[in-house]
Length: 73
Image (cartoon, rainbow, N blue to C red; front, side, top):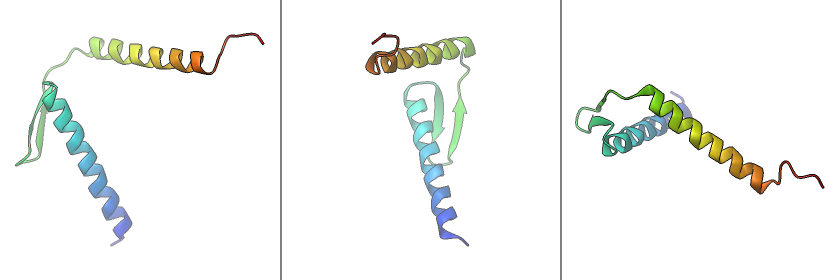
């Protein structure tokens, strides 16, 4: 067995377990550490899409200001 692939699998599992734990702490799901089961509560997809779009737009605007895009020099 390739130990690099095994280590990568462990890292991916740890990251997914960490994400599931944070989502559960935020109240969007239930995570059981003993069984490893994660149940996502029903969410409003439109609200999530609007939230992610606003984060992306604000991030792009911050990059534009930082890089001085749109200024004629």
